[in-house]
Length: 240
Image (cartoon, rainbow, N blue to C red; front, side, top):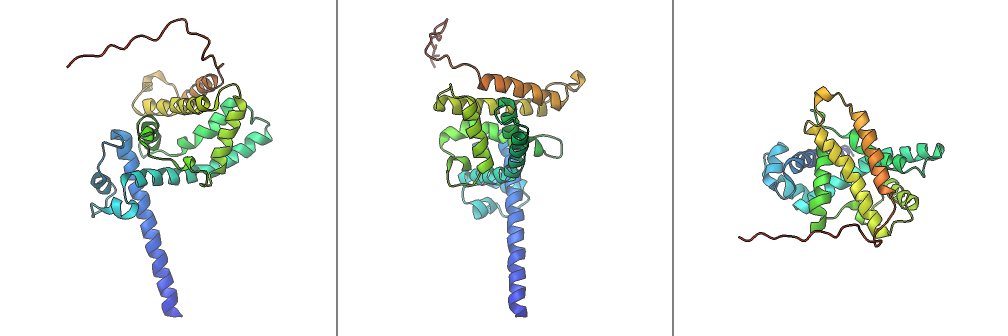
């Protein structure tokens, strides 16, 4: 019995160490991906950044870069779910679930809960890069799998769709992504030093103003097909 109990304790300790190592690797990858993009970082660099003596530690724990990216999203989405669920309950109690800005707050505010020692937001920068570059390359997000249990995130997006019924579903997905990118880009610009400290614009004001803009863009009339005032300009290609 004592031997069996010792084996169980040893197994649990190994599992805890493995989980801690996986988190170190994911956080190191976030920082590097945020700075240089997903394609610009080698797995061995992530292992070094995470303080791993074995350069193949990422492959051992995750298998591939694509699986590492997916694991980061899975980890962060799971962190965000309780916060979003709580905010949804509070918004429902206040009868504000039809307010586009409130829904965008629920979608975006959890990102503010993750910051590095210097107050920067590497996960947000990493996500912005993913949305603009890597997603189209086929790297999936847990939300793409309907079997993944993220009920709060799915409810927020469903409520946003109900709030903007005049926009076709495909275009609405693009609008939601654009609204989120407005928020992520605001954080990236702030982390990069804009606005300047001497301008005295606190984060709270930046967040509020950005979400006002995002809500206005999200709920704007859908006018495609009515005919623009100007035609799109012709593209000029340069010769080598």
